[in-house]
Length: 256
Image (cartoon, rainbow, N blue to C red):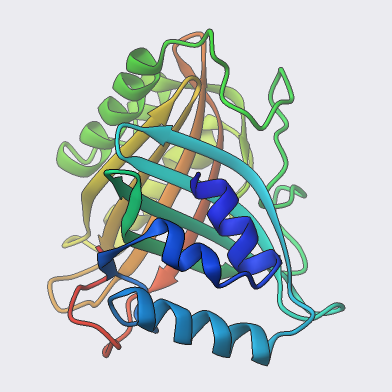
């Protein structure tokens, strides 16, 4: 339902799906949008009018309980740089009642040479593996985050990840050593750094973590959605989208 709603709304501009699938209590955490179905209708109408040639491609979809996540590539105008977009929707009684997202411009180059969307680990499938144990995949990623965020121990990657550890964040290289160095350097540069996990969504071999990354108590920080693939009990691939938290918002809900 959510994937159909998303495609109809953004790819086809079909506003009727708002009446059909969005609940009256719709809460929006995108800082540019208001709450409620009518606010969503106004936002989409304005956005599509401003970007009539927009093209959206969904790379992967995962769902757990009442949460559905879509990871997509958006091009607002042909010939311009794409955006990496991760949307999370909460569904209640068959209607979408809450929405979060993180949007990041895609740079022209990356350190690893990979784009921000492709699946490189085997099997090269963007869909969750129905035979992969969701609970185990989630346990591995939550253990990694606990060890990094609470214990502040980058050696977590030795325990919970395995090389070549394909990295799709455009600023970083592949591999466990590179991941460890990233957090070692970050903790050294920012002693007050905090990573506050807000929600975790898992399906099969894919796990997403939505969190608030702050370098200090006064820092507005970043909204981050990390996306991991777990195979045979180890993290083998990572994607993410990162967006600065703005000082002001069109709603009172925060990005989290």
